[in-house]
Image (cartoon, rainbow, N blue to C red; front, side, top):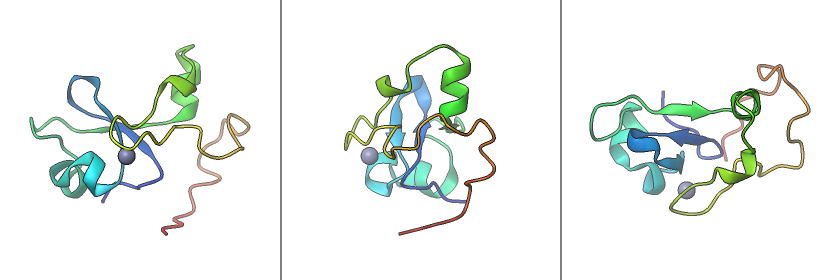
Length: 88
Ligand SMILES: [Zn+2]
């Protein structure tokens, strides 16, 4: 599956990027693996919160897209509810 451009991902060396092909790089975008072959990890708000970190510190290093892009932030711990594939 390809990356979602509204989501943020962590790649090699903790690089943070969104799922846009120009930000993730085509390798990560199409294969979900960074140039080093390491699988990129989807950054979920619930996961960030569970580590005690502030989700606001995470944003795409290229375009600046933040993890908290919508007003609905940490309201739903059950993240499967709003996993509707709404591609733009
Ligand atoms: Zn980006």
